[in-house]
Length: 316
Image 1 (cartoon, helix red, strand yellow):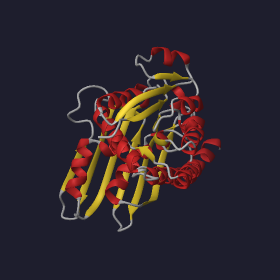
Image 2 (cartoon, rainbow, N blue to C red):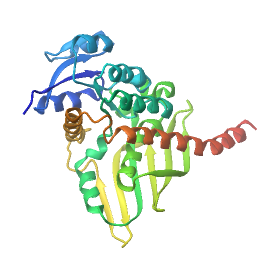
Image 3 (tube, rainbow, N blue to C red):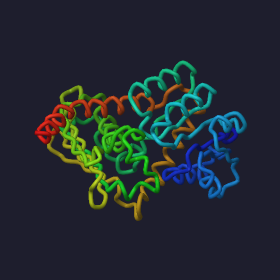
Image 4 (cartoon, rainbow, N blue to C red):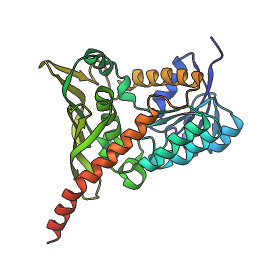
């Protein structure tokens, strides 16, 4: 086997422990450097990797083969752009960028530079999801329902930017939506939004949403999102044309809060390593990352007339 790939991780927030643990377990990777703008986050980092406050300095001095980008959504574009321009492969947390326009810039840049770009849709690597996908292979699907329900305050890990629409890109549709929409795309391929209902809180943050979709062959799907759910439920239900109903519970068999993420992120970094070694300019999550952004924006547009009508009624 060739030498381990040098990995840099930018962002030592709530999701970074899963990447760091996966990099430590996998022989494909050597954690070379970490980066965070917060001095206290770097001080608390226990590993021997080099530490940087600025990602550009990391790219220049550590010279990683690849970079994990796990920072707030509004920083994805400039950070990924700098890495891709420097010829460094990128695995970026979902969503790919703050908007579809920004996501398109990154996909086009990766293609132009010939540098791998991957969006980390961790739920498609869930063992129950993979088993469900195998069972549907070659079979006609009648409908799909994805539920992605949680109380967001329990998942912040001290990162309040999730509740700032300007930094997150919205609320539950912008943040949880891409993961859930990607699961439908995994099963059905290309999709179109046919309807959406969104409920916002007093601060204007979307807390609940139902997105209705249709696949190319007419298969229907729905995505249910909730940021105010008492507990956590994340599952998929698939009805096949022959009437059989299949179910995948993404949390089953994983004891403990967010315990399912350990194996999902190990699978992400395994696939990312293969992508970096082959040098393919875009991986399975790159164009999918852009498609998820486009679907989320379509959901917001679809729901806007109803929201505008509700606002007008409240103003009377």
